[in-house]
Length: 449
Image (cartoon, rainbow, N blue to C red; front, side, top):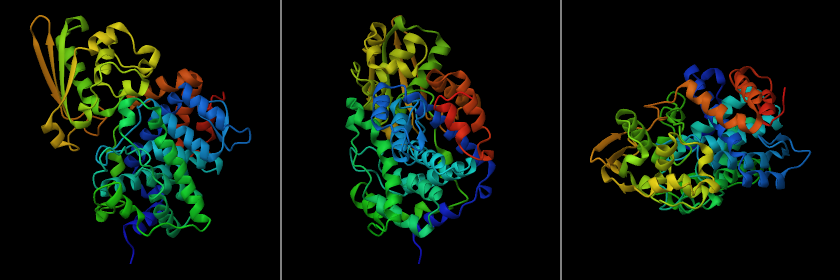
């Protein structure tokens, strides 16, 4: 009798692009465009470039996006997964509490390029991988306290995408999922709040693990039967509801409930930024008029309370710093979190007047709602209050097609040039028609047409 992993594996291998509704394909296209932009933008970071340079090989099967060098298939997945995490600008799925796209796409793209697959193959593999990841993420219980989701359960989606592109059977994919379960990472949330850059490699390592899991399966290795249920039911998470992974499989598309980020820092603070933008638009106050700002959010948002971050990643997990950037400059740019920019006096002065507290009611309403209440006390005595239950980019308040395209261009053009950004975006617009992924990969790697 087949179980939930057998059913997921059969779904992943048997699914045809023609079986996928047009609106679901459209959502996948938006996530691919968004994730590729974030990857290329992340390659501008010096640590990412140094890693890629150490791993580069002239005979590599894959181009390093934004890097001007070649990498092996595994190392392309590793580097691109790492780059895609660097800016903390990547898509996520609040219901399962993780970021499948930045695990799945680096694997799918590396294999599509190295194996000469069509654009339609890449698109289908991305959909399959994202759906498998979200469904297993929903089936698992709460992660163990302090465990970061990157490099853990989203790896299963990358395994499914890899299996699909490598042409393995459903039985082989089932075994690869079992095998991968005990190879997923035990990662720490504390690294993000402390600014330790090892956190940025979690997704990249997870992507590489996914490729290894398929290779080892094809070489005859195996894993514990229902290792997914064991690891994410008793070790890394508290309990698993296996049926949840396959309810309405093929008719309800869980990955389409993902969010895209409008701001390049931790998602748990976006709600407060949305409220501040609305309050400022309505009341027209300036940074110099602010006496104090009180932000009340859920538990993880409340951890984003550091007022004087000293490292780039730590700053991306600092709500006071993000507020300082917004009210000082009127916007939050990806590059404003670099360490050389963290000591800007005006931003520091504003951040020092921001208080972040946990709101137990908002926490109790998560993940259905990810809300924030913001109170701004002005020096003239006015008290401005606003709140939101859903940050922009959630399915309830999605980014427009124009906003997604603009985000891509703003991230990609500074790295590979505007003509290449435009060419890549145009190629992505006809992804399902491409005979290879070269029209996408070449311009994103900086190769002019």
